[in-house]
Image 1 (spheres, rainbow, N blue to C red):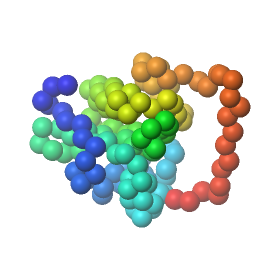
Image 2 (cartoon, rainbow, N blue to C red):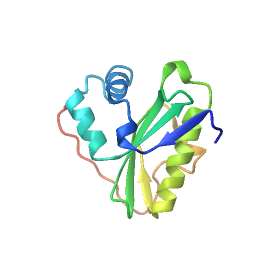
Image 3 (cartoon, rainbow, N blue to C red):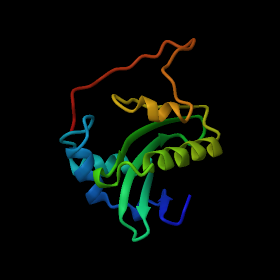
Image 4 (tube, rainbow, N blue to C red):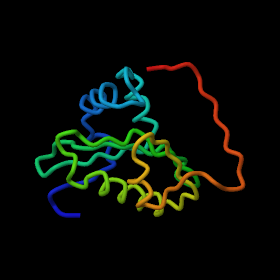
Length: 141
């Protein structure tokens, strides 16, 4: 990665105000999420921020993980003004390398519109011997 951008998992470096604003107003999956819930989600995840040379946060994602076997990739977002620069690819490449370094066996994610991005990093629809199940509780912003 060039010196133009930096990726960090330091939670103290995150621009939580920016994260909450964009995730709760500019995504289809978390519209209306409260700041309290946003901070709670970050605090209980491995967060990743992508920053420009001036330190401005341009992208965010978090990996909910046990750091041993499993991870759930969530809240992947690139600032609208920074899209088209390959930042999502840089961020996902970094996160998948970190998941591999941790030795995770399985990383899941859900997306309504970015399957092509994630396929570039080895993600695919679930088609194996497991019967995956899920339960949804009433929405909590």
